[in-house]
Image 1: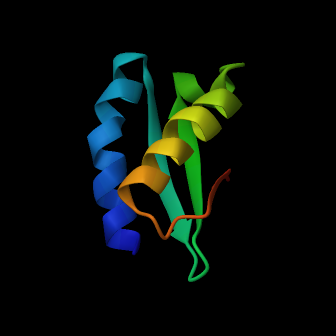
Image 2: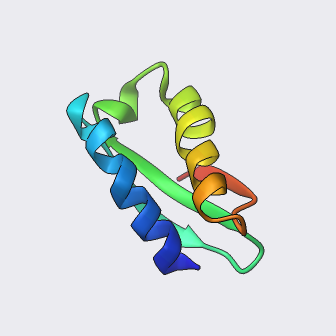
Amino acid sequence: MKEKVSDALSKIRPNLQADGGDVELIDVTEDGIVTVKLTGACRGCPMSQMTLKNGIERYLKQEVPEVKEVRSA
């Protein structure tokens, strides 16, 4: 599953990089919890939680149905 998540993140990474940010995959657990680290401009952005939940989490759940939740490291 980690490879599927990594592939999905690589598809949305250009959108984050366009705004000066990025996302780094930290871990994927057996029970579908994905831990990521927002970097660059995303790290200190007040909208980062919204990006994480409404953007990254929603997309990952769509692409990798086994994903249950995305958390920030």
